[in-house]
Structure formats: C-alpha cells, structure tokens
Amino acid sequence: MSRGELALLVLEDGTVHRGRAYGARGATVGEIVFNTGMTGYQETLTDPSYHRQIVVMTAPHIGNTGMNEQDPESSRIWVAGYVLRDPAVRPSSWRSEGGLEESLVRSGVVGLCEVDTRAITRHLRDRGVMRAGIFSGDALVEPDGRPRTTEDLRAQVVAAPAMAGADLASEVSTATTYTVEPVPGSVPDGGTPLTVVAVDLGIKSMTPQRLAERGVRTHVVASTATSEEVLALRPDGVFFSNGPGDPAAATHEVDLLREVLDRRVPFFGICYGNQILGRALGFGTYKLPFGHRGVNQPVMDRRTRKVEITAHNHGFAVDAPLDGPTPAPYDDGRYGRVVVSHVGLNDDVVEGLECLDRPAFSVQYHPEAAAGPHDAAYLFDRFVDLMTSTRTEASDAAAH
Image 1 (cartoon, one colour):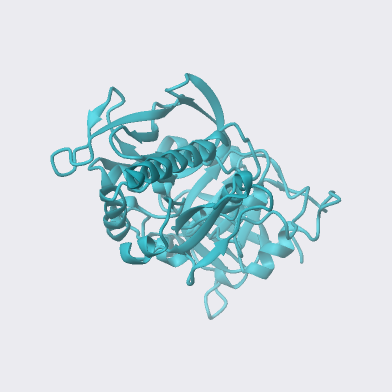
Image 2 (tube, rainbow, N blue to C red):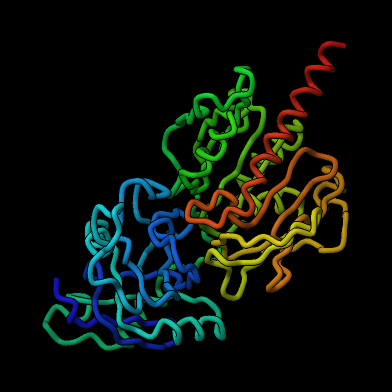
C-alpha cells in the first residue's frame, strides 16, 4: 500500500494538518487525544476506553515491535483513528506476528503519518481536546470528482457527537457473562477461591488475569447487569472496570453500585469505575482540558506517601475535596466518610477514593498496566485483603 497518498487531519477549530495515509483509507471522526507512552501501542489500540477517540502518539517512532496475538487488551482495535509521526518501515521483534499498518487495515482504522505530532499535542494542550477527522482516499473527493474543501470536511467533524454526555459502556461491554478461573496453585492452602463479579464497562483482559494470579475467580458481566444478577453470583467483591464515555451519563451503573454499597459488599473500581464510585457517593465529575493518557504519570498514595509512576487513560475526573475525610454528599452522608486516597502530582487531580465506613475504594489509573509500569499492582492485593477480612468477619459473626 503506497504511503505517498495524501491524508488530512481536520480539527473542529479549523486547524488542518497534511500528512500521508496510514492504515485504512477513508474518513473517520472522533475526539482527538494524545498518548505520551513510549511503549505499549498495541495495548493502547485494543483498550476499549479509546472507543470513539482519535489517538495521537507523542513518541516519534511507532510500530517497531509489530503486533502479536498475546498482547491485546480486548478482542479488537477500538481507536477511531490513529496519528503517527514516523511509523516503522518493518517490525523487528522475535514476538512480532505482523505489522502495525496491516492490523489497522484489517480493522478498518483510518490513520495518517508524517505529521508534526509535537505541534498537534501542543495545540491540544493549549486549546483542549476536541473533535477531529482524518480523511484520505475517496473521502477527499466529491462524487463528481471535485476535491472536497476543508470547510466541507470540518462540517463533517462538527456534526460528530461530542464526548461530553456520551454513554458508551454498553457499546464496548461483553454481551454474555464469562468466567476467568484462578491460576493453578494460586488459592492459599487449596481453600475456596474468592469470587469477584467484574462489571465490564470496557474491561481490559489483564484485569481478571491480575485477580486470577491472586487466587480469585472472576465472573465478568455486562454493563447492563442488574443488582439481582450481580448478587446472585454471591460475590466476595464487586469490581467496576475502566471504560469510555461521560460518567455523568452512567445512571444505571451508579444505581447498581449504590446497591453494592448498601449491602456492604467489598468494592474496587479502576478509572471509569473510580468516577462511578465518586458519583455514587454524591460527588460530581468534570471533563479535563486534555486528560491523562500514557504510562508515565506520577501519583502519590497519600496513605503511604509513596509516589508511583502509573498508566492512565481518562478525560474525566472526580470533583472531591482533597482535604478530608469528608462526609459523602449522597443522601445526607448515607455512606459515611470518604477520603481522597491518591492524588496526581502534575495537576492535583483526584486519583483515588477510599470509603472509611464502607468496604470500598477506587483509583483513577490502571494498576493492571499490561505494558507497565507495575508500581501499583499492590492495589489488587489490597482488594484481596479487603475481601478476605470481610469474609472472615462474616464467618465469625455467623458462628456466634
């Protein structure tokens, strides 16, 4: 496939970048965001949280390790479009089973390369993320053969739905329940494994794997699951995953989590799950100017004062007071006191919540981080400890 073909990146504010077509040819629109990761592009592409987003990679050279069947975070590529500066001519890795561009072509993902990704990133940092479109091939010409004007292309971009107000979890969630069993030998003393119900809001495959490594059986259910369906699985804990969209639109998920909190079932949430916990507790959420996306974000665990380098992918954040503990606003403090457990050191964004009167906590970043870093893997241990102590307390209470 010739890489000499023209492609245009058109932003909703009228900014236009000329590059070369990469991946599939055609037109795509979505919210344009940038990812600062130096590695892990296959995990980025297959992360359902990037649904309806055009991703700009700030690392200048992408594709050198190719693609394989072991590293995907889901069953498909989810990005709406892909923007690179300098794609690899050919992959060079013993694990590679194919090239990046051919994977994009098979998935119908429209992209472009040979553009100044540094300039695009600086523009988005100054102006904020916005809608954009990538156009190549037949998408650049009218039916009669005349070239389409950039104003025509911009009109197509502006007509696309915005991310604010978008309820997208059901578009990326599993259609049927499935179970990930514990890794053999991981259940302590051969006892009964802990059971987690993971609500799939756009879950990555490494999440149930991290639980399986710790002797946990995970039932992954759809985002539309009811509280009756979740509780019928008799979980020791409930997990809410990462995912795309505006948490303000996730009314079903918030109601489901309140049922979990009411029954004092241990809860752990990641990314979108953190935002859902915030809204369930009565806090607001808001859209960040350009979000956090990459594998190099410093976060402080305020309990230990330890700084972790973490993986992120979010455009919304929880609006909760950093000084705490504070009563959860919902229903006159129904869920007791809450503390901001983690904070981002770049911009003081809330990166974690911990309930002091309910067995529930969450973080905004990704401790499963298949591509690394793995500084925050201890959070899965914390969840296991929480479920174990709750199970022990329930057993002791039943015995008396």
